[in-house]
Amino acid sequence: MNILEKVNILILLVTISYIMALSNLLSNIDDIGLQVRWLITFFTSVGLFRLLILLVYWLIHRSDALLALYHRGKFVKGLWTYSYEANGKRHLGIWRISQDVASLAITGYGVDEDGKMDSHFRSISQPFEHQGVDEIMFARTDIASGDEHYSKSTLYIDPLSRRSWLSGPTDIRAQSVLYGYDEEGVRHAELVLKRAEKGRSEREIVEGLRTEAQEINLEAREGVYER
Image (cartoon, rainbow, N blue to C red; front, side, top):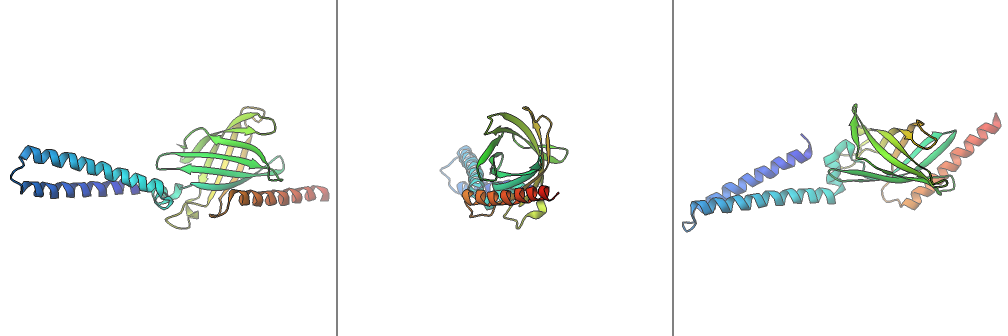
C-alpha cells in the first residue's frame, strides 16, 4: 500500500466521521425531515470527500517533499547531469526532469568541451516498466547537422542513494539504444546520471561540465600521445 492509498483511507475515515456527526446533529432538529437529512448528509459528505482529495493532490503537486514521500525510490524531479563515453570521447549534458503524481517528462541537452550545446532531446513517452526496470523513449536532435533520431533508455535508479525520506535517489545508471539516422542500433551502455546540487544555477552546472569535459578529453589526448 503506497502513501497515497493510505491518505485516501484517512480521508475516507474523516468523511465517515463527518457523516456520523452531521447525522446526529440533524437528527436533533425536528423541523428537518428524514429524507432532507439524508440528502444534506449525502451531498455535503460527497463534497467534503472531493474537496479533501483535491486538497491532498494540490499539496503534493506544490511540495517536493510530499512528492518525494509519495514516489519514494522513484522521485527524480529536478536537474541531473549525465556522462557517457562514445568513440573514445566523454560526452556530458543535463537532464531536466518534471514529475508530478501521475506523469514524468524529460528535456535536456548535451554540451561539448567548450560548454556549447551540441544536441538537445525530449522524452516522447511516459516511463514504462519492462522486466522490472523502467524504460522511456526520446527524440534527439544533433544541432550541427540538424539530424534527428530516436532512442530508448533503460533506467536503473539506485533507491539506496536516497539521503532521507524527503528526498529522492541521487544516482541513476542507464543504457540507451539509438534508432534512425546513421547510428541505428548503437548502444550507450554506461550512461551515468547524478542529481545536481540544489541551489546551483544551470549556468554554473554547465560551467562545471565544461571544465570536466576539458580535463577528461585532455587526459585522453595525452594518453594517446604517450603511446
